[in-house]
Image (cartoon, rainbow, N blue to C red; front, side, top):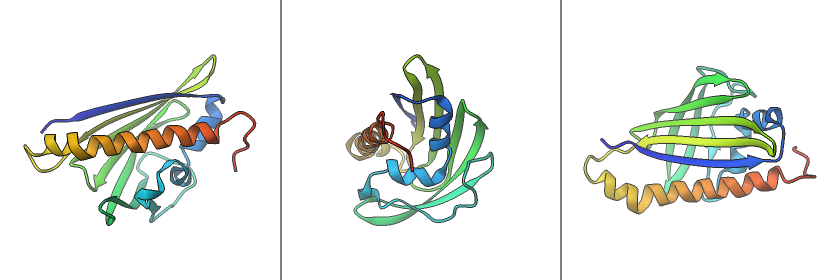
Length: 157
């Protein structure tokens, strides 16, 4: 089973505490997720993440068919990083590290994702043709949304 890796880095012109406050609130995930995913949080027991937190979502990633996705926040070290891992969902394995580092220009946000697919040997073709391009599109949307949200002079709501 191959494990694929994606890494995205972006500098936001804000202090690390502001970046952390935004990313550590599950409600804000909707703001940085493309509308075509029809992303919906099904349960929200807290405004801020904590180790052991279970979050259930519904997404429409393929052909508009709804699918459930359950993740667990497994590690939190405020304001440096947190990790979410899939417990049930479309991936055989999903491990997403959110890393925050202070820089002279603001906060560097690093998304490091490791994932694996079901389907055995056809997974490599499926990843190449559908999954990786879709994930790249989602993270490109996310980058643009974050640029808009954290544009100097814009107040967070």
